[in-house]
Image 1 (cartoon, rainbow over the protein chains, first blue to last red):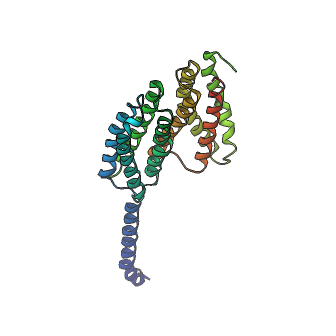
Image 2: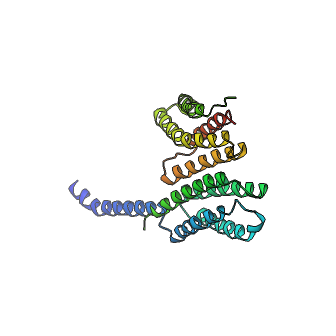
Image 3: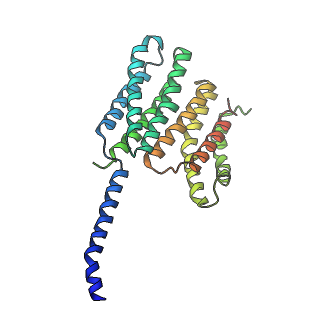
Amino acid sequence: MKTLLLSLQPKLLLLALGIFVVASTTNMACSPKFDPAAVENATNLSTLLPELMGHATHSFASHSAEIKKVTDALDKAVAHANATKSNKAIADSWNTLKNDLVTPFLARWKEKGSLDKDYVKEATTQITKSLDAIKKAEMAKKK
Amino acid sequence: MPDNSKNIKPSFDQLDNQIVDLVGNYVKRRRQHYEEMAQKLHASLKKDAARYTEMAADGKITSEDLGLLIKGRWAQLKIELLSEGSMARNKAEGIAGDVLKLTLNTAFQFV
């Protein structure tokens, strides 16, 4: 019996080591890694979006170039988040920001031509706080 | 239609019990956890929703703006919960959607 146990020990040790390596690499693969590009996207849009929204009390048509620049930057950020592995929650946040906050605001601006300052102020606060939450989540990823 | 803006905040406060009841439509197990989550969602929404409703009642924003702001505030809350990792999808999404409907219905009584 003792001989049997002694002969098994190296194999058991190797098996335990194998399980540990597989478990730790699987865990690493599932945890999102720190992504400087995503942080930069959130930081840039935290400046670009409120700046653009501040112009929404004026004519939509006269800001079309600026609107395109900002929507392109947002599309790029959303595509990056969606393409990142193990990033479901943050990608959902980016999609919600685009589909439920920015797009309805721009559609309303386009439809009305210009918006009231009280509405713009509240909508800007919502988008700024949402971007802060996304940035915080990006910064919380393991470096 | 109530035209008194001082009724706005109490109307949102009265939704608290309905929020707890609607959780039963979604969950049987871990009900207390989801009730607490729904109350947290609503507590966070109602303060801003009452302010937006007062702005609409005062004519500072239109009723369409009011609807957009409440939906936007709900989206902001969803992003905050997703980013914190504290929102379990499926059931939580359903509960959050019903909280939004109740909040919208209450707001539109005043505009």
